[in-house]
Each structure stands twice: as C-alpha cells, then as structure tokens.
Image 1 (cartoon, rainbow, N blue to C red):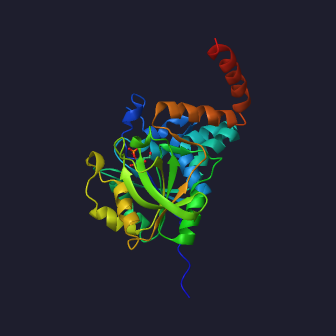
Image 2 (cartoon, protein in one colour):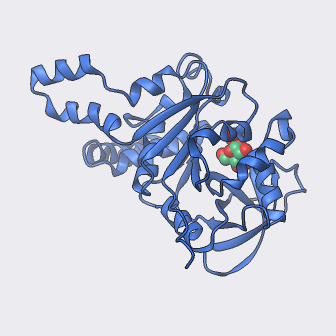
Image 3 (tube, rainbow, N blue to C red):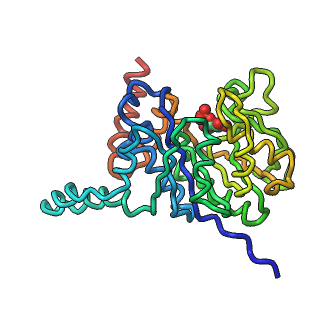
Length: 302
Ligand code: G1P
C-alpha cells in the first residue's frame, strides 16, 4: 500500500522586497506593515495561511524588516499597560498576531529575485510540499483560495498555482500561463509560463497571482535556474521548467480564481482593498458605509 501524500503544512512568505512602488510610505517602513483598515497587510496573509491549515510560517526577510518580527512577537510592555487598564479588547488585538502561528525567519541576504527568496526556504521546508504566499497580493478573506489549491495538490500531486484573468492590458505586470483543460471547472493544466511578457507575446490573459503550492522538487530546479527577467532568479522560470516536463516534480495545475484579489503594491488597488474591507467590518463598517454613500451621491456627483 502506498503512503498517503504528505499534507501541506508549511507556508513561505517572501518579504524581502524594497516596496519601491509605494514610496515614500515604504522609505522607512516595510511595505508588508502598511495597514489595511487597522491591520498590517502581512497579518491578512498569515491569517489566510492559517485558515488553510498552514500554521508553520517562514518569512524570508532582509534589511529593514525588523518591524515584521516585532509584529508577530510578544510586546510585554504594551500588554502590561493594557492589562493594568483592564482593556481586554485591545489586549486581544495585541496578542492575536503573536498567537496566530509559529513564525520563523530567514534572511535573503542578496536580493536576487523571488526564485532566490524561495530557495532560501529550502532548509526549513525540507522534502515536503509547501505553499508560497506573496504579501502584496491580498486575497479577500471571504473568497478562500489556498485551501482549494492544497486540496488539488493532495489529490493530483505536483504543484498548483493560482491564476486570474487580468485582461490583456495588465498581463505584462505578471507571470503569464499557457494552459489546457484539466477536465473540470475552475482547474486547468499549465503547459508553459512566461514572466512579464512583452505586449503581444502573452500566451493568455491569465496572470500568476502570488499563491503557489509547490512540490519540493522546485528547490533543485531553482538551484539551476539562471537569472531571467530583470536579471533576477524567477520562480516563474522554475515553474516553466516543471510545467514543460512533468517528470520533474509532477504536473503543474492551476486554480482559476474568480473572487476578489488586490495587488496592494499599486496604490489604486490598495485603496479599493481598504474601502471594501472597511465596509465589511462590523465595528467601523456601518458608519463608514453611510459616509461613503453620501460621499458618492453628493460629493462625487457634484
Ligand atoms: C511576482 C512574480 C509574478 C507574479 C507577481 C504577482 O512579480 O514574479 O510572476 O505574477 O509577483 O504579484 P513581482 O510583483 O514581484 O514583480
């Protein structure tokens, strides 16, 4: 009898990027710490991993990212002050990020690209399948994606990425996939990939949206992957090698996502994420929605 495939339990979150698309806010603050309503973007990502059953989280960080470690660590002084005041509601908020998951850290050292960042996770991940979540892609918590990807990996093996139709006009911002039918709704088989294709060279409008469930064979492939677009070692290029040759780490499938997702490194999408999530909140939501309706009807219509 063959052993059941190993469950996906580890998440890797690359967080070493400089965040230049969001200057000047990111001059001295890691982009992952920018709040959406009142919670740093990175906390939504860790919550997403935990919601999919992945509570071992490795962040790949770099210089100037100490705030990330502090955010997921205890803050004894703040806890003591809030305890002294009997402010249990805020105490719960302070503790929530600490208690969420076991968070480990490794530093990338040289910023040699996303593929290199993932390779830095190899000693921690070992020979298990694992997930990668990119912090600047926020998946709406109401539209679970990662758990459907881990389910595909557990059923079909290999690797699973998430794709979304972003339209031909935006595909040059992303990794882009050529796909064929996998015989069921919402799932496709990836046959090829290209990182940030030039206009007119994209095989589809399906973009890689920063969620991956990877077979550990990706580490060997990454170690041999030459620098690609932007002179960086690209995860997309390693996945292309795997998609073209299923002998290496099994097939590459993709879940085609149709829910809400925000690329929060672009200012317009960051604002949209903030408004949508604020409207849905039970505490600030009702008052904010009322204001927003008036603002749209009166101020914007004027
Ligand atoms: C990275 C990946 C790209 C993917 C994108 C999603 O690019 O290399 O394939 O589509 O994330 O946001 P980056 O945004 O880091 O340039």
